[in-house]
Image (cartoon, rainbow, N blue to C red; front, side):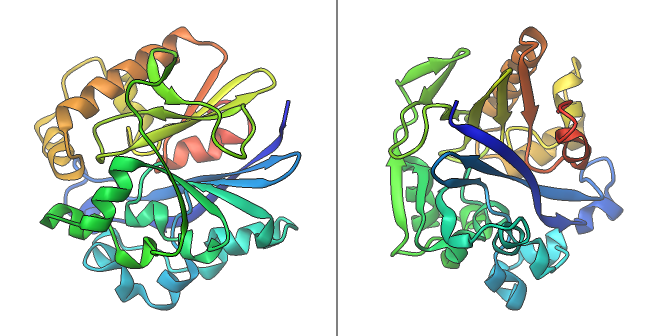
Length: 273
């Protein structure tokens, strides 16, 4: 087993403006749940939250910055938290963002020496920013031309619990793989990590709250409206959520987290995610 330890980090807290105006539609508080994986030879960061430059110059976040209402704390950045844990940021050799939305990719410029593993479709969409929705969600500062990008095709690969996946990521241990979780962005994926007693799946933004997976009834009109706003394919998102719910129910050896549910973050280190 190459995985020595998994650290759970909150790399950005949000209090979305809509949470106070439309509490049934938006959460009042959300986090950026990232993972720092310690292996025998390197550190791997899953998602990166906001970066140091975002904190110093919040206008870089565009209109979504004030809408999401981030707490701008430099000590919450992945870069600072890696140092607080006693590591050197230079030990972080690989970044695996589940997708390149601003609240997941902000830390990429802080680790310019690291290899960045992304889906082909995701990097293409983030670079082109071809419509209004993608111009809001992707920030050019987070997609540096000189980053060490490594891209993957997510379709037609091997299967992991019924989901297409990519195994054997170059340079990374076989216990880490990326899992196609379509619906949120063009190349959204989850990251599955094999632990000593099972699996941990970071599902990114496949869902926002664990309650979405527990509900057997159709989403409310408000939730359905939000899906159309936040996801490129809301029907695909609903199908992905249904499959994740079934997987969570059928696999006792599986832990699952998403990016933004603070309750999952509180319980993560206890082994009850």
